[in-house]
Length: 305
Image (tube, rainbow, N blue to C red):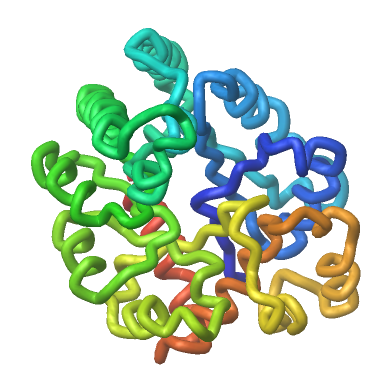
């Protein structure tokens, strides 16, 4: 039986608040049995930690023998730095130390070039904004190194900014380049450093030819699945299709109900991980089972070995 892990999902988002138990049950029916939840700012540290504690493995009923597990991560996303300072980094440090036995990574962290370019909207110059982002990124990489944790890295128009930091720190546990989109050369640079690449909704858009062609060429050992739900919706051309039916753990009569239920109402949902897997499988030469097994092994390598 194939199993799946969503390596990046913001389950704490308000979009899921009223329907989370039902949504997690649907994930179980689709054999999505692990969900990794990164935080984005000090405002949601507690929420992410409590979410994992409340729901992980606690669903009952016919699926109780296949419990879903939620794993929290702590970090500060580059989108939410405008009003933050070093005291918030200290707050992160304290939270990580306190929750060290509960979290599995530092994330979501990174550098966003598009945010820097539009910094005037927040009363900053692009240079000042980029420096602020780099300061937070540097601190969080150092924290990951100190605590022997992998990282989950956000990028946008910033591969050239991120790579020097990763080369400098040479983290033992490496991590994931979240929502990878880029060239083969950029991908190879991360892989050579030991990082895995997050495969998400980008590949569901036929216009994303560069990323799709890159993922065709890369070793399967370098990839993991993610949704980034509720953000990053899939293309309409893919969401209109049926979800994967060859998963031996899912009864065919339940497929349509799962895919069309109210729990799929946000822009994106963790149950869409199966559709992303379908698309990835369609561009890879390996069998479905080989792809699924290797993707899970890749997750084990990063977070659980």
